Length: 137
Image (cartoon, rainbow, N blue to C red; front, side):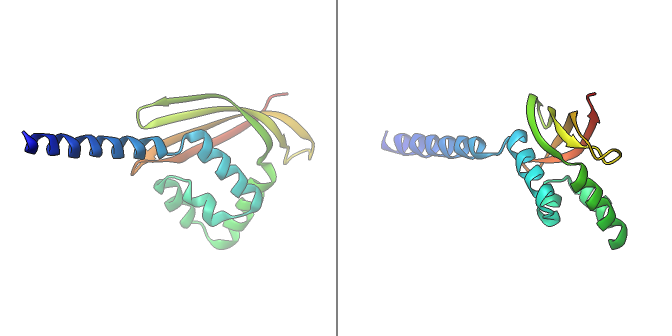
């Protein structure tokens, strides 16, 4: 009987530790907040860490001069502020629907914008697959 109680204790401990690890996993919403902060700061190494492996591989194929130009555009057009309107998680895919303010790279004016960010899970972590913004005006 003592063997079974020890075994049950070990199993319960494992279940508890596993559930803590799941609870500690960051949500797409929190990942995007960190990603956006890193974009604004121009911390491209951190920005890339939030992207899918496929996106990182795609970026690494671009020569340094073009990459720097692309990063300038991304930084200039990043949302100044935003609110998450909806966070939808379906298995290993997630989508954020956002509303915010961003500076137009064409007019230089701050405009209302609508955004969409697609995520996939890679190795248990949410990674950004695609981000898109459009003017809401």
